[in-house]
Image (cartoon, rainbow, N blue to C red; front, side, top):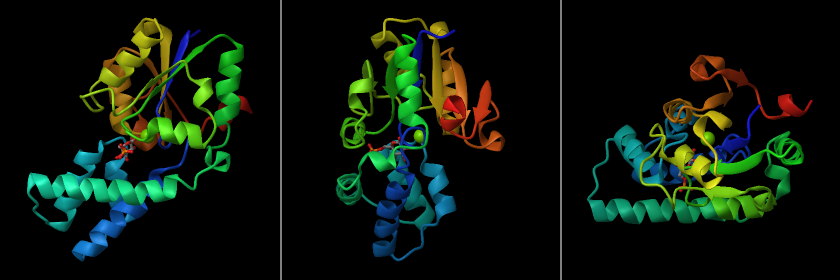
Length: 208
Ligand code: BG6
Ligand code: MG
């Protein structure tokens, strides 16, 4: 039995992938190419700047470092316009119930996300107070599949890796958890998350 649970945000607790997609798609349209939902799969779990590089590669676009920073800001402004409208209804099924259940059984809870908007999103959907620690894109320098984000979360909870379970929907996130020496539950398709210790369709399966 685990003493700590570490959660990825996008795709595990909230469905923000659609907003990231819409924001990137608008940039791609400006540049005159189509950015598809299947292209968007490549951005899951990936940092903002790395995501931009992938989008540029898909469109065959080259930018200077300064232009890249400006475009990344533009994308984030667009993304925030969607995020500002979010409320509790955008929590994924079972998310709040499962977090509450863990708290009742004394399990410590941390967020382990690549997003720099994580705290804002937790507040918008009303679950910020359920976390004992929040490690996000503003605190770590090495992106998943590097284990840094989960190692830091586990440390902030005052626990050892073997005492923690990670919930992840991205392949890079599953790899990060394995590299951190933690038990990992994949959320999504076994075809993509096959390296996880267990794969489920969503947190709703655990509160059933
Ligand atoms: C991850 C998402 O959680 O955060 C990625 O899966 C996203 O798609 C990344 O690019 C960075 O998010 P943000 O909010 O800092 O741009
Ligand atoms: Mg995710």
